[in-house]
Length: 487
Image (cartoon, rainbow, N blue to C red; front, side, top):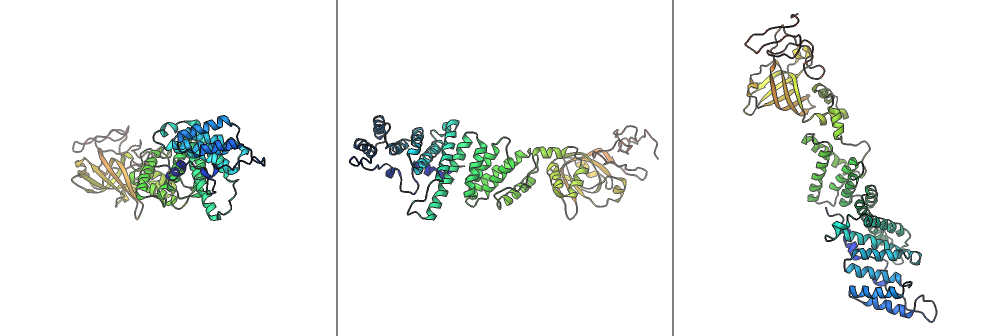
C-alpha cells in the first residue's frame, strides 16, 4: 500500500510555514538596516549580501552565495533567514541530507529564534526525511539508516511539542486554525511512526499511529500501518494487529479493491496464526465476525480473541470423538474452541451403528449413530452422523444394524434441530464389522480414547485386537474362540 500519499505533498514542499504568512519568501525578507538608530543587529553590508542571495534563482548559484555569506558572517543575526534559503535550494536539488542539515542548523539557533521558526525547523527536518524515504532513487537505502530514522522521529516529536507553544495569529479563524493544527499533527505523527518503524522502534510506531488515529479514527492507511506495527513488536501483538487491519478494511474511505486486497492479507495472517489447520469455512466465519466487530469500535474489547495454534494444539491433546461430541453439545466458548480444533481432523477407528446405506458412483454414504454402550446401541434407530466413504465401493455391502469402525475426516456439524456430524474421505475397517447376534454383546466399545477398550469385546472375524478375548475368523470361514468362555 502507498503509505501516506497526502503527506508527500507536504514533504516535497519543504514547508517552513503554516497559514501564518511566515512562508519561505516572507521569512527570508529581513528588515532594512537601521544604522542611524542603532536598532539593527546587522550591518547594511550583511543585509545587501543576504538580499543578493535571496534574489538568486539558480539553486547551485544560490547555495554558493549562501556559503560565502556564512563564511563571511558566521554569527550573523540573519542566519534564521539564511537557513530557510538553504533548505529551499537543496530541496530543488532533492539533496535531502542537506535539507535536513539546514533545518537542524536553524533549530540549533535555539532561543535566538521564536517558537514558530523552531517549529518550522523541526517540521522541515521531518518532512525532508519523509520525502527522502519516499523517493524511489534513494528511499530503499535511506529507509535502512537507523540513525536517520531516529533523528526524524525526534524532530517530529519536537515539532509536535513546539506546536503547543504557538498562538493563533490575528486574522485567522478558530476553525481554520483548528483544521491546520489537525493536519500538522496528522502529518507529524505519520512521519514519526514511519521513522520509528524504520528504526525498529515498533512500540514507538504504535504510539504515533494511535496518536494520529485519535484525530482521524477512520483512516485506512494509519489503521493498516498500526496493525503492521503491532505485528513487529516482540512478542507480536496479533489480536491488536488483526483488529487494526480489520479497521482498515472497514474504513469509509477504502475502495472496494483496497478492502478486498487487505481482507485477503488479513485472512492469511489469521490462517498462519492458527497453524493452517482450521477449516476454511470456520476461518471465513472468524474473519467476518472480526470485521463486523471492528467496524463498529476503534478499540478491541478485552474479551475478544481468536484462538492461536497453541490453543488449538492444547485442545487437540487427548481429544477423542466422544469428547468432541460432548463439548459441541455443551456449546459455549469450549464448544467453539473444540470445533475449531476438531474440524478437518482425521479420527481413526470410530465405532458407530449403521442405520442406512446409500450406494453411489463416487462415494458410499453411511447413515450412522454414534453409541457408547449396549443400551445406546439397542436404542439407536435414527442416525446422528453421515459418513461419506470414498474409494471403497465394497462399503455398500455393509449391513444395517451392525457396528463398524471407520476412519474419516470430520468436516461439519449441525447443532440444530438435531445434533448431526458430517464426515468425508472415510474408509471402513472391514475386519471391524460386527455382526451383532443375540448372544454377542457390545461392551462399552467407545469408552476412553474412542477405540475398543482392552476389556473382553466381541470382534469381527479375523480380529486379534484384545488379548484373551474371543477372536473371529473372516466371515463364511467359521469362527473360533479363545480366552474366557461365553457367558
